[in-house]
Length: 181
Image (cartoon, rainbow, N blue to C red; front, side, top):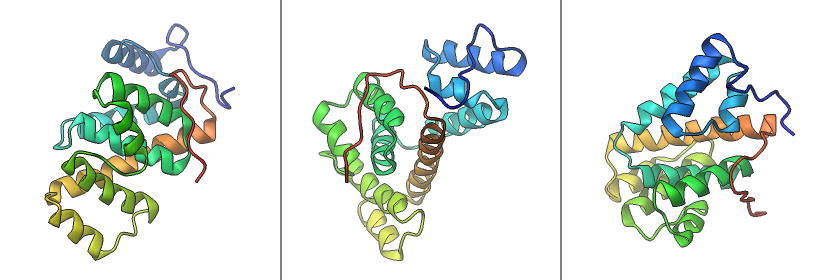
């Protein structure tokens, strides 16, 4: 059971109600994560703005979903693994093998593999990548803008992983558990 209340759209008021209504309109559902975040409307607003801005960047939805899967696996966040396995399959149209590979920083797609190699370095070193990691990303064809977006996507997913783990958000997606490493 979630450690913080999950604010329901039908009982929310003010800014919280407006934000949850926007989530419902955009997604057709109101995930429990957003109901937990809206305990502070500023947190949900920040998440939506950050996520929305990155959605307009250079990295495609399938690549961003693979980053989310990798980061969730690395951080042992079952809520995010569950959400991004579902979104990866149903929105990004990744097959089961590619979803599993993404969890481990691999992909059959060369561009996605390059992104995931760098994303893995970022998350595993908590941002302390080496010059060689940047060089390898560039040598794999990533632009400086894409490298910057990979870092931002890792950071966004670390935030959601930490929030969902700390709050123990009730999983409202088909459940996927992290592998023991």
